[in-house]
Image 1: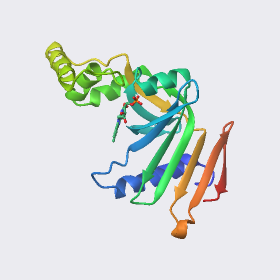
Image 2: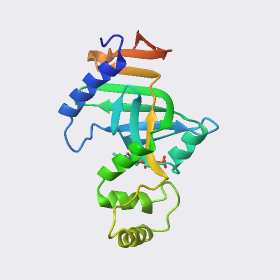
Image 3: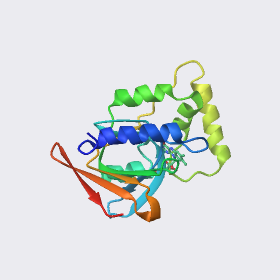
Length: 195
Ligand SMILES: Cc1cc2nc3c(=O)[nH]c(=O)nc-3n(C[C@H](O)[C@H](O)[C@H](O)COP(=O)(O)O)c2cc1C
C-alpha cells in the first residue's frame, strides 16, 4: 500500500510523529515555502490543521506576504521534520483557498483572543508599536463584546494539493532512505532516491 499510496504513508508517519513528539516541539509545525512573481522564494513556519487526499490545509491572512505570493504564484512547498522519529516529509504542488465554510468552521474553533487577533493584525505590514496592536485588540474586544466574532474575509485556509511527496528516513552513517512520489494524472509513481 505504502509503495503506491503516499497519503497512506503520510498517515502512518504523521501518527508516529504525533505520538512521539513532546512539548515544546509541535508535530503540526511545518515550513511553508512560496515564491514571488520573479521566482524569489520565502519560507516561514505554519501549522498543519488538517490533511486528506485533497491536500494539506493551513490557515493564515490572505493579505500577508505568503498570501500575496500565492496570489501571483499559486504553488508552494512544505517541509516537515520530526527529529524524534528521524523522518522528514516534503510536499509540493498547487495551492487553492479552502471553501469559505471550512474557514468559517475552523475560525469558530479558535480562542476569542486569536479571533480578535485575526482582525487586529495586518499580517506582514509594518506596525508602529506593540501598543498600537494591543489598542486595536482592545477596541475590537469592545466591539464584539456581545456577539460572536465573524471571520474576517482576509483570513482563511489554503490547501496545498500534493503533486510531489518525498519521505526521508534517517539511516545510519548518513545512508538515509528517500522515497519520492510523483502524481501523473491520477496515478502516483514512486522511486527511491540517493541520500
Ligand atoms: C510554531 C509557529 C507556528 C506558526 N503558525 C502560523 C500559522 O498557522 N499561520 C500563520 O499565518 N502564521 C503562523 N506562524 C507565523 C509565520 O511563521 C509568519 O511569521 C507569518 O505567517 C507571516 O509570514 P509572511 O509574512 O511570510 O506571510 C507561525 C510561526 C511559528 C514559529
